[in-house]
Length: 139
Image 1 (cartoon, rainbow, N blue to C red):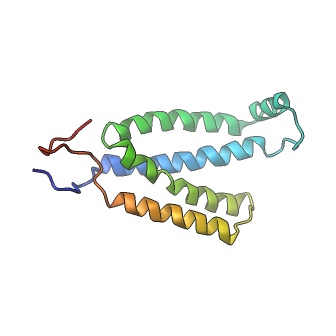
Image 2 (image 1 turned 180 degrees about the vertical axis):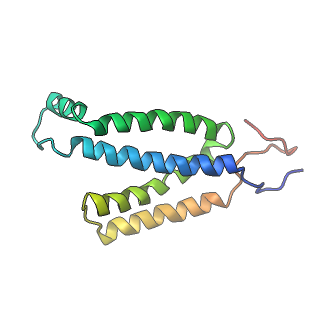
Image 3 (image 1 turned 120 degrees about the vertical axis):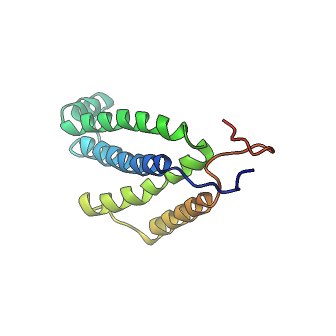
């Protein structure tokens, strides 16, 4: 019989950490890719503006890496376990955008991120894999 909270494999922990880093890179580079585009720009002008700089291509590379990484994570852990951890990227994006993009962090925004992190903590207290009544890991 397996314990209700078996040890989490290092590959799962590393994959989730990499997912948070890659998501942060994606979000920040998306913002940088469109940062110089005027607010009233058409969709076509926005797309052309994004394609003309390097940040769009960095975001696309990070998306590709994220796809590969996420497939590896989900091969080793339940989606309902792994996905909530990616919410940690809300904190990392908030921190990076505050420092590098000089975005304002209101108390309400910080409180919301705190609640998200509390949810991630609760999920972390559960098993990374679902087991059936006989203790076999289900896919």
